[in-house]
Length: 248
Ligand SMILES: [Zn+2]
Image (cartoon, helix red, strand yellow):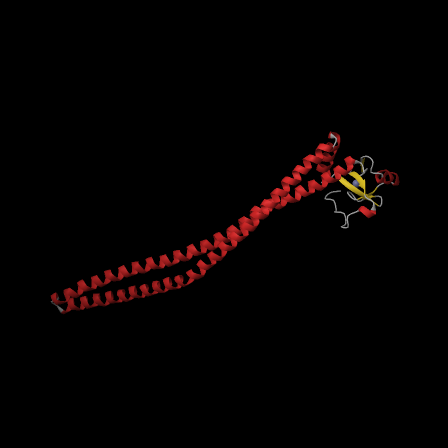
């Protein structure tokens, strides 16, 4: 086969390889980020759980202080009991004491409710802590695997880019210019001709064109899509079916 044509086919293979590696590399960071977000969500859940415990504890302390104040207030009223002179004063004092006692009961109920809230919130903490541990481990494992894959892809990309530079150096400037122009226009620049059809645009070429391309001895362009055409004898064709081209 004409060497320029062979190298153009290699160049197209390398360009596809470089594109695939670049896409795969770009996909690594979002995967790590997604795993990091899972971890962050579980850490936030734990922080919220701790905040609920602390909130209930503060509410309980405030209610306990309220109760102490109420008790102190009632004690002062009780001290006045001995100083009471009239029945009316006595009645008023008794009424006051009864209402203070009621407020104490209410404060006690509030303390109990906050204690229950605190206990309920505390019960959730071990599960939330374990979840953070699990997510952290998963994140670390995932990140290690993905960083390893990233490193491998980077090396492959460097090798493909170096090989590309080597191939480009063998091509005539006009040939590489034509390749780049058709690649930009069509998404691929080189196409196989098989059974008189350009596999780039699925259009039939003339028998005369086909005969010429079959020789593989110079550069022919598809009359329809301008792709650079080559011919493979059936026995040297790859086993897998030819890749469909991205644009006609
Ligand atoms: Zn074509």
